[in-house]
Amino acid sequence: MNLRSQTKISITYVFLLTIVQIGSLCAIYWLMTESEHPISIFSFSLIALCATLLLIIGSLAIFNQMLKTLQTNEQSLIFQSKHDLITNLPNRIYFFEYLTKRLSSVQKDPKPMALMTIGIDRFPQINQALGYQVGDRLLNHVAERLKNSITQGEFIGRLASNVFIILLPDITPDNYRKEAEAIFDIFSTPFSVYTVQIDLDILIGLSFFPQDGLEATQLIQRADLALYAARYSTERCEIYKQSKDPHHQNKLSLMSELREGITQNEFYVFYQPKVHLTKGHVEQVEALIRWEHPVKGFLSPDQFIPLAEETGHIKKLTLWLLEQSIMQCSKWHKENIPLGISINLSVKDLLNKELPSFVASLLKEYAVTPSWITLEITESAFMREPDLAIAATLKLKQLGVNLSIDDFGTGYSSLSYLKKLPVNELKIDKSFTQDIILSERVAQIVKSTIRLGQGIDMTIVAEGLHDENTLKMLKHFGCDLGQGYLFSQPLPLKEFTEWLKTSMWGIPHR
Ligand code: C2E
Ligand code: CA
Ligand code: CA
Image 1: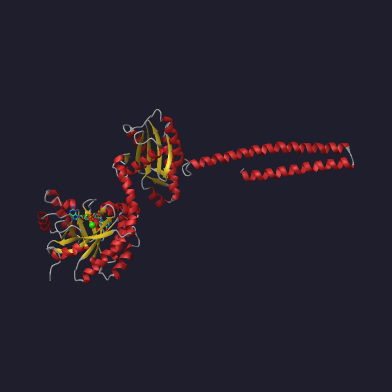
Image 2 (image 1 turned 180 degrees about the vertical axis):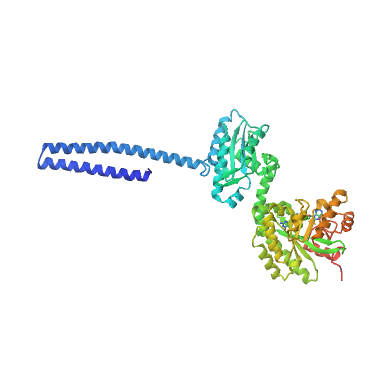
């Protein structure tokens, strides 16, 4: 029974007994003044006495019961404020309090301990694909398995939606591996949620007391940083390393500066020629983005594109770059410079449903023939999200633009797979191009790739062309286009316009 109904019943009880008591007292008074009948006076006095006694006993019992209910309510409120509602595990606040207490008790005699963060990889995707109900149930199962695995002295909590944390006494950088393996083992059997079997991949991060910090905040934050680093480790498990920390701080500040950079127009387009090897002049241009950071100077895309992908800023950057490039292409054609332009798309851009209609509207606005435009998508993007990439490329292809596979050779390099895709250009990665004069084997691979690619109507571009010998060999292999420092580095518009006029690979004079 809850406190509200208990209060209602108690008020009714006290009210009724008070009425009986007042009634009896009135009756006694009336009898004494009007009839003075001794038996009646006695019986009404007895009733009044009983009512008073019942009132006192009842009130005490009610008070006691209400106190108990209040205590239970308070306890459940305390429990709720310290535990996570989905898994019933200690939440971040409670874990923090507990760790602080444990740390203060060992400060005088520091015994080693470790904090292990366990992150479920791709949990948001599971939620999206199977629904939040399944996601919550899954977390429950995960918590249960983890809880059953901990031994005396260990303490587990839920740090964030898909991150758990365990306090492990006596664990040091020398003996943590066994513990980590035991946790990986727990996840080796799939989880059965309703009727679905779910295989989970996990990541593990660790920080150690006392070497990584003496305070709870620092140790938790560092275990979390190690977990972040585990994402990029082949072992899927990392211990905190100070050397990686400044990078993280730097990354965090770069994330907010990126937003600022977009609003402050700090981005530029550089152009690099794609030269037709037999015709001997530029045919296309690749647009490459640059960020002129107010403090750090020019930043290369490798320094911020992954960050822009992570934060979702890539969408804005790509739309901006598409407009700049298509506008520039239109200008060139109006000036009788027949150059095609290539723009890089990130895998995240393929998720943007508005992209095809945006490209279509730009083509219309700037009166650009679709075949002048090539969209470059890296091979790894196709491998990472094959279905999505195919669907997106099909939509883009319908606009009449060209599609190119970038960095070919760095992924699975399956030509039979590429045959299914509506792509018409293949860019051999620079790591291959640069080795053809050094290795017969690489030369054979490149030669066969050119032949096979051309066999399925693809234009082949060799990236990273540095020297005349490589150029000669590529021409011999029948490669269509080349791109690299041999012709030109990526240049800002003004310099590139100059290059077009003056370079032997520039626009032929008519
Ligand atoms: P990518 O698409 O493979 O672009 C070619 C990269 O190789 C460019 O680096 C270019 O400067 C460099 N490069 C060209 N010729 C040579 C050469 O002869 N030798 C060597 N060693 N390198 C050469 P950049 O501009 O730093 O771009 C790096 C990557 O960043 C690009 O690789 C591309 O994947 C990505 N990227 C650049 N701009 C954009 C963009 O606007 N959007 C997206 N999503 N990605 C972009
Ligand atoms: Ca490219
Ligand atoms: Ca490339």
